[in-house]
Image: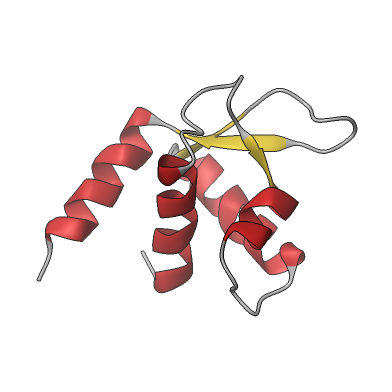
Length: 84
């Protein structure tokens, strides 16, 4: 887990994007915090987390894919927060 991954999971959790209906687009995630990173970079990290089971794919928003944090992603986020 790196800083970008932690921030993405935190944004999804804070925004209550925890299921297919309340998911967020990459653009919504990118504008929630000022990363200074391109949407493509954020999308690549989301894909990594999707393959790891930390992020799931939600319902489409027009043509855009949406994403949400899974229960496994919430556990990982809490574990990282607990580290000192």
